[in-house]
Length: 301
Image (cartoon, rainbow, N blue to C red; front, side, top):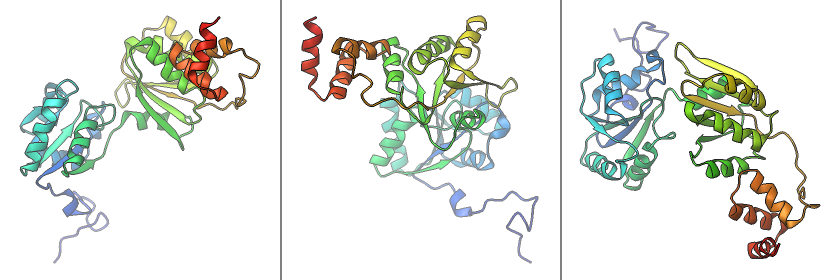
């Protein structure tokens, strides 16, 4: 009698639809998503992969070591993070080319999303090394689905720069973005980021502030940017945030600057957070002239 091999035939069995797909192959990099808070979110396939690969590359070996101990997995760990990726990336790729298999994991979520794993994937792809993904938790997608904002079209912006001018310039460039925007933010930077978003997008733009996703204290606040700024004047930000911001719904006239002087036009962009250099470039692009002409007019005043 044959062994039942589908959920309908044997609902109590562990079911891998394609055994070959779940077989750990030599010389392969596995991008393994790990829980972002709730340990129950790890998949059977992820556990199987972590258990069977030759070694694991981890953003933080201490955090990953705790996860592996909970799962009852003993495995060789290699540190791979932002400040050692230039050295460790080629070493990992060499081991893969020699026939070993490796699982890449981050502290939480999907590797290569706001993570140095992006560089390892690029390196392995350039060297013709097989790469496959073991999907799972992703904070950005989790937050998007909870935001109550349009999900059909979105853009992932990740972490904004800690540099004030660079952050404001990036937000100014997104002023007319029509897609829903997703950002990661740390609690100590949240107030400054919300202030800058309000300048760039306006107080009435909707935002969902998602924190401690999948954890016991998960919280989603759906408000306007103005309301968010007012709230966090009184409340201390705590936990890691995913900010989901409504896209631009207003239609700005193409020649909004038509009645502005060159100085006012440049000042408009600078007030939105751009550096003078970037503001001059934007002004020149709007007017269809070379930037040196704008510089000359500004400097002559």
